[in-house]
Each structure stands twice: as C-alpha cells, then as structure tokens.
Image 1 (tube, rainbow, N blue to C red):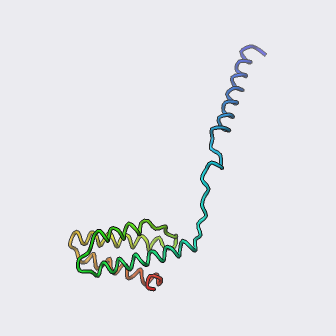
Image 2 (cartoon, one colour):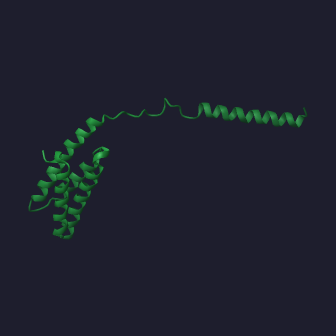
Image 3 (spheres, one colour):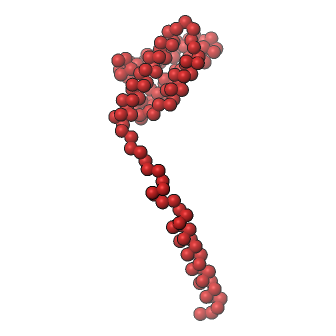
Length: 134
C-alpha cells in the first residue's frame, strides 16, 4: 500500500473515531431528558370543571352589576387562561375567553349589543355543558 493511501486511510479512521466519540459523549441521553409526566385525565377534567364553573359564575355575577369592573374581568380571563384544558372542553374554553374579550371591547366602546351577545354565548354554553349549571 502506498504512503498516500495510508495517510487517507488513517485520516478516514480518525474522522470516524471523532464522530463516534462526539456522538457518544456529547449527544444527550434519554436519562438526561425530562420524563413526561403522566396526567390523570379524570382528575384534570374534574379540576377544570370545578374551576371553570366558579369563574363562569363570577363572570356572570360581574356582568349583572351596574358598573362593570374591567380589572376583575381581566382577572377572570387570566385565571381562565391559566387553566389546563382537557381536549373535550377546548371549544367551550375558547368561547368563554372570546366572550370575555367581547364584553371588554363592548364596555370600552360603549356597544351594549356586543355585551348582550356575549351573555347569550355564555348562556348557550351553559346549556351545552350542564355541569356549568350545578
């Protein structure tokens, strides 16, 4: 074997060794990755229902007052957005957040029709999800 071929062969082997060492020691291992935490779906659903019902009740009570407190409205929205939402309630969740936004915009713009439409949307959701009425 010629001297030139030996140099290429040694370079090739050195490159392979470098790649092998890099992949073994540098690449994160499965043990270093965070484990996926298991979610108890029944518990998640029950917690969501309980917290959402309280927030919806607070929201409707706030809407019945003569002077709407926009800060409390924002707090309800923030608490609603902080909830973990089960898949089956995503549409409800989006509708509730949109309703709050609509009431906020209606209050800022002085549009009573939007406020009424938002209340109707919440009442429609209460009909579709009976646990909101308990």
